[in-house]
Length: 235
Image (tube, rainbow, N blue to C red; front, side, top):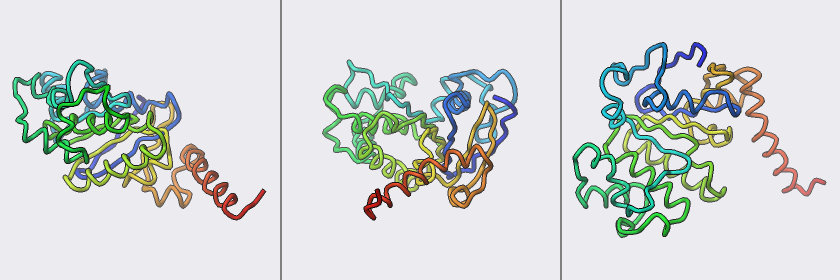
């Protein structure tokens, strides 16, 4: 990280984009101390994240990984409730059912094993697990990157609707600028450990944010033009 400074407003949905190696995942992991920051200050609700043990901090932050990381020997209910078990609290069956419904899965999924699920279903379970302790902040590190385009689009829209419905504060890392523009309220562009642009999606589409940001915007813009050309029968 190189002089990163930002405020994340309560209730906002922010996307963190940039080329591979720009520092996106490193910044995200510093927030919940998967990587311990060696300088600066990170505050969550006014509290320094370094005050107190890391496990207590992580119970205040939901985290969704790209590869989900479900325990293969545990069923869905046990995977969702793993955070409570670590904190010596068992989630009641009704809470598990409610979390499954929250991510648009039938409560009957509670008894299934991870290898019985599709990739999109496993990722929904990952979101349910991240929300099990009712955290005020949801971090997502390339949450849809391993999914096929149709599932990725549907799950992205579902997560955005869920964010709005329950009043989350969300920070999502993605390589996909189109995904960032369509899902987020605010887009942060990183380059070499620095935030080089901080704009709304509309401002980025209108040309704001500088050269690095516009290089990223150019990709979905060119794809949209190519698709329009195909629809017109060009070429």
